[in-house]
Length: 36
Image 1 (tube, rainbow, N blue to C red):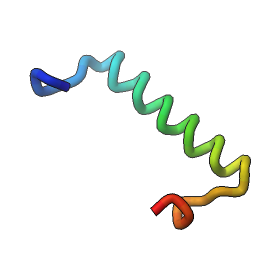
Image 2 (image 1 turned 120 degrees about the horizontal axis):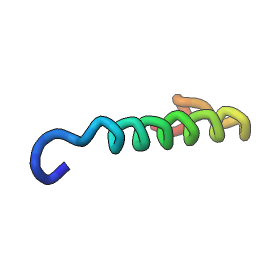
Image 3 (image 1 turned 90 degrees about the vertical axis):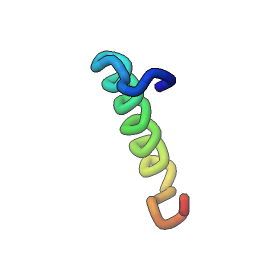
Image 4 (image 1 turned 135 degrees about the vertical axis):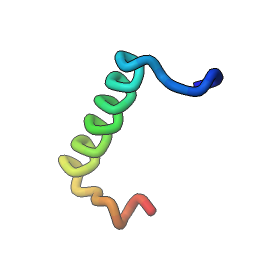
């Protein structure tokens, strides 16, 4: 976010992508410790 805060909608979209990514990794057998 160049000018400070994200718009709420943009933040929600980014958060959803993050959740989807974690869910995908879990489905493939990759867990948090493996990503560090």
